[in-house]
Amino acid sequence: MSADQELLRVRDRAAVAEERVDQKPLSQNGQRPNGKVSIGEHGQRAPALSNGVAPSHAATNGAVPGHASTNGAGLTQTIVTFDVDWDSCLPERSARLSWKLGQRVKRVLDAVLAFGIVLALVPLFLVVALLVKLTSRGPVLYVCEYVGRRGRRFMGYKFRTMVADAEAKKPELLHLNHMKGPAFKIRRDPRITPLGRVLRKFSIDELPQLWNVVRGDMSLVGPRPPLPEEWVEFAGWHRAKLAVVPGITCTWQVTGRSDIVDFDEWARLDLEYIERWSLWEDSKLLVRTIPAVLMGHGAY
Image (cartoon, rainbow, N blue to C red):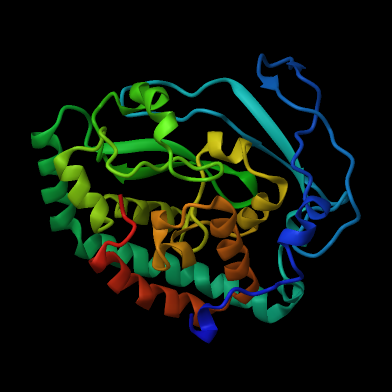
């Protein structure tokens, strides 16, 4: 492992994880006036530590377990809220002007580059859309809800790579999940279409997420956004990865992707990315993404 890939011991996050972040939802189980259910209880907090959750300045963010699927299923009405001090999840230098200006430049570059790539790839988009439509039943795009920066939910887009009733078949396959933690990955997933395997191998299915980058929901580089049902199952310290805008590519993407089977390791990579963050680090990750995508390691 090279020096720039070596894992950072950033204030030993894992060792004090449960002291830093409260993973318990806000209120007791019960019916809210609007008919939505809040699950969980308000937990006592440990003192604020850097890259954790503090009692003060907390933002309340919801997550909906369940997402829009390509078979037309709607969102569920269950909401789980978490009290998170997002500012304390960032490194101390995030208060400096250089960090704030860098984040603004990052946003401008994201929007300009993503929009330019979308325009350049319009012919590819049309070809892929036609192939998806001709080779399997169902819509061209898979549209589902993700949890983004500071717990804000947004609708994300991918080319559909699975059969139309994939969500209905998921409960039957849960026992095959090879990930340790709140993520669902299956090698040789039987729901994936033949075309879908090719699209996934070279990450072509994720190209529509460039529109999410243009909109500001995502960045070109950043931690991958979780699904609401995954977010609900996060350990408290995992939530710190969403203190920044999620991205299409990240350290996880270029260091093995789904071959990294321990979600704790995935989360640590994301937190280390946040600690290291700079425009130069983003540039290096973008360059490293090219061979990672072409080789297709860990993509399934």
